[in-house]
Image 1 (tube, helix red, strand yellow):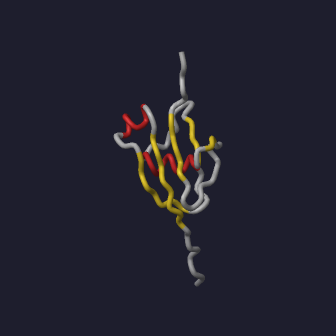
Image 2 (cartoon, rainbow, N blue to C red):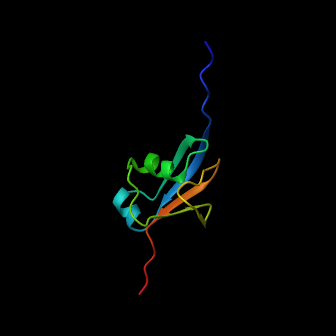
Image 3 (cartoon, rainbow, N blue to C red):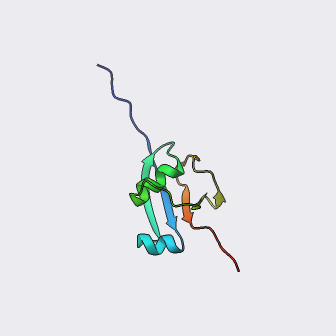
Length: 86
């Protein structure tokens, strides 16, 4: 029998802004996720929600990214609703 593959985890910081912070009841979380996790997977782990709210924005290390973007050790992932102006 072969050894089971080992999963490497990375530590990241997650931040929630504006109405997300209010809805989730917290502004930040520290997580360990499998290396190579997408920001969509981070959303699910951080919130226990599988559906990503419509038009939700995400940034990694203060740069907007696509939902397929993979996180790395020490990344800061920020989720926030779209900014509206008037």
